[in-house]
Length: 194
Image 1: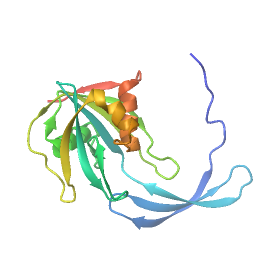
Image 2: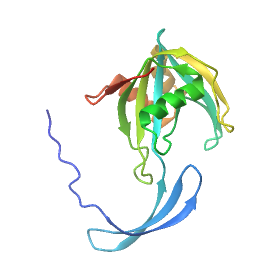
Image 3: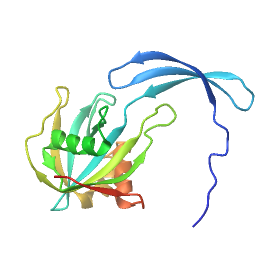
Image 4: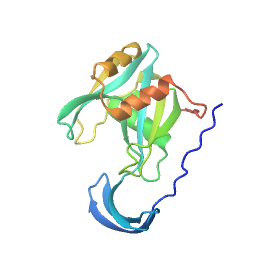
């Protein structure tokens, strides 16, 4: 195995922080930090957000249970996997099962953690936890939040690569989820879900 040595530069020291905004699903803070090279002070804006989950729900027939929804940031309808914010005091596994059920009405036989990723470490402090849900079956009607407008779509897993290649699936966190599905790590953990 190739040995890599990373993280050899010293971190910046945070001197102070100021809260700028509370935007319901995230907060913004302004940090003042000291450059370790020369001691000069610089300011940075950071988004404090709860952890998120994405879950790739697979049916017994080899389909992915996906959702179409309108996204205000891009003013477009996107094709995604179910996802959401981890509520305070809730584990990512519980969030994954809850979001899958709420957004699609499907229930998995098992959930497996594929890994986690930083959505944008330049300005955000949170993690994205990525799960695969296997042997999913329709269980109940979706229970959308008041601001969600979602359509459930069954997409053959075999079509996902071409949908990413042609730009139909363009959400970077969804693409990362499929990357981890197709390139599993040694750290996967499985959770039975009943």
